[in-house]
Image (tube, rainbow, N blue to C red; front, top):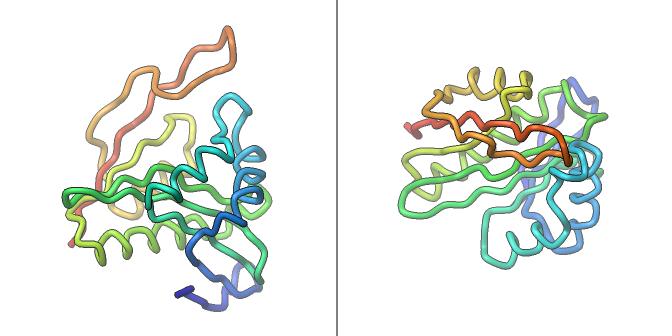
Length: 163
């Protein structure tokens, strides 16, 4: 069931719902807008996430796809694998709403901890995660792919316990 609520910042109605296979082309288009080609997930990766049963969700503003995320849950742990808001919609609190939605899902599925990785260069996301109670637990060296000749970027590992 989609969560629907009016949003004063976007001047629209926000809905978060399960991603469908039909959403994959639009999700992949947002991914390509948000990340360089070498880093963007392909349509096939999103389809695989749906196929294996990850919690794949999309966020809509006035029925227009504006963001998405993928959460994996196993053995009492949740891993936020991907979360993204369309570049033209960023800075309006939609990322916060989406991450809060995934925290609620993790709680409903009885996860004790939510984990994620974030680029050191992604300052807005790091600030968001900190404000939501995530703490740094480690670094994965050279985690993120890079264009040929460019250095790979580390990943900061974060975790948040579910109360």
